[in-house]
Length: 40
Image (cartoon, rainbow, N blue to C red; front, side):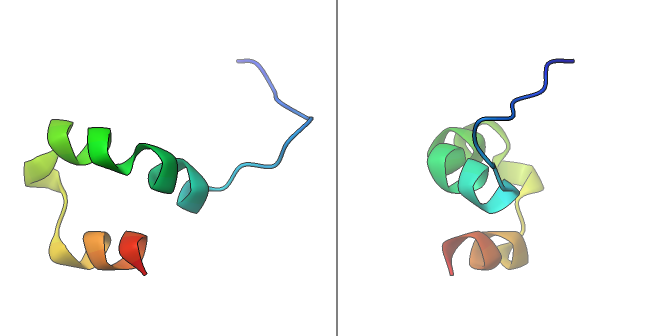
């Protein structure tokens, strides 16, 4: 596993950057509650 020390990443930023591709691939796994928390 490679560690990245130059930048700090958060799950919120990762989802924000890749949300559209994630939702296309995992549409049935995403509940309204998850979607609401990512979009807010």
